[in-house]
Image 1 (cartoon, one colour):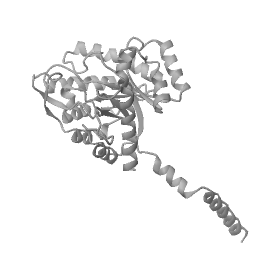
Image 2: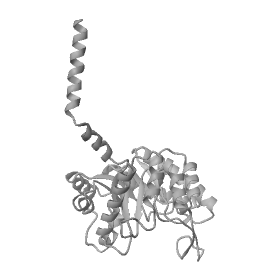
Image 3: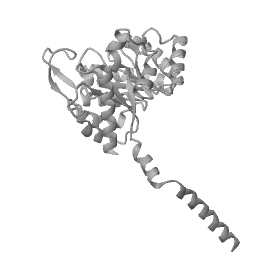
Image 4: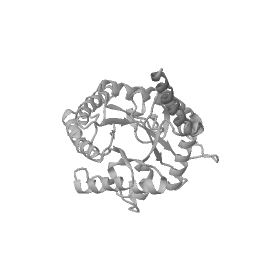
Length: 313
């Protein structure tokens, strides 16, 4: 009888405590949290960076103070000679800590072709990327973004890229980092080719960073990088194919209509596919348009992402 009364009192206290928290507030907090988090890709500010109006050290502070964004994605072009400069990286990291900013990834360009058929060239390229794995690890990033470029047939470049990605992934795994490939032109703009390349690499930490642009698979000049595009891979099909191995998403925008919707990508349709995949990671704002200022483009992209998140729940 005494034990029963004790259990009754314990249950009553627990019920009363729970009742003190507004059910409406709990529901509101749950509904307010989107299934993805927003980060800011540094390329969104490439004009200001190239013109020296701001520096890479300013970037995380601007992300937080100007846009209210607490996660950033660097581009190595803007601190190309600093990969091994610990003093510089320490200052960058301190600025992030002072402003409550998380370093999410570094986008790597200009370090050679991971898909080069020549084994000696490829080995040098892989080695060139090691310094960025180390820098990303020091900064607390989750990933480095790389390219799967190479000259040759689709089959040869794919085999070479898969080999490089596997070796680079092995090195990155020691630092608990991901190596992710973006659809960034050439064969990587082909959804099936890129997915098959990742599968050939066969490492859990090697994946894809889907970008809503860059899906041209045939150009008028025959050059996969330049010239008018004659044929594009279906971006929605590609993203749906890639999401099982995606370790981030690059939300590219170029132009908007009067209501703030992206003209070149149906964000509701795209994010329905992303949500259906079970994705829970970061979506990086990458504004690359010409009609709006970089600041306005970033703000419009952020507002669009927040609206889509609210709509999809």
